[in-house]
Length: 338
Image 1 (tube, rainbow, N blue to C red):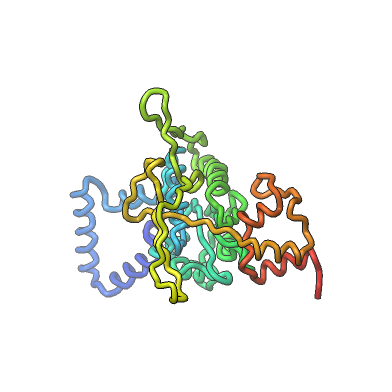
Image 2: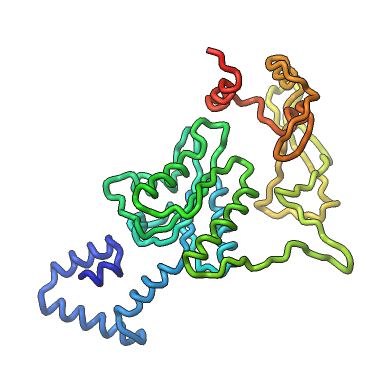
């Protein structure tokens, strides 16, 4: 039974034990012969293939994600692509459909999980989150792991779910191969840097070359010309072609129909595409902040590595309309006031 238990999950082993306990000795012999015959039809011993599968799972990376809005899933797919470019054998698994008992058989796991509200796991991650804190949680002494956490720093419990996974997996005996990365709303660039360094360590653990396969970063159209590729990192700033209010002048509601001019960008709209509206803080709220803090609007500050005036940063880069417990706590560190 010790050999079989290494090939089957705990749930499968439990079902097999129940079945065999209901069979007579003659029925058990018949089942044994049936499985042997089935293995012969498949070109080998019935037990040989599971052994091979179990061995191959030791040489692969599982990218396990828990996402609600789709950001975590998108990053997981990116991690899969980067892993495959390194020659890693990798598989993508959603926490929502992941069999929690299979966690004990995972040897190399890259966890990507978001946090919602006041430190709440996304629905897809709730069962696994509860499992690793429960009495049934397995020992993971042979598991290597790394965690990428997504969150919003304006909330007090920033990236709590990811931090929970990182701390609890270590408590269960798993080996952390890279420090946790806690990502704020602007996560794409730090995530890519972290993926490259972390996947290099996984590659060493799996005995695979750590050199990434090069990818083409530019696309040419015609001789001597380059097509600009617009993306979230390089957006096309579309001028407003038309703006129409969909309510009467006496109506207090505001619903605006906007048409954007994108001809110069060479973009073609398809269902599922989206346009982003980047709001600016009003001059009134900026003046209120400056008056309350006594700061100089023309003072030079650095935001995301770019030098600009404080007024410009307050206008375009910083959130001034939402005050949370975390914001107040951080402000009190700078200006203590009971």
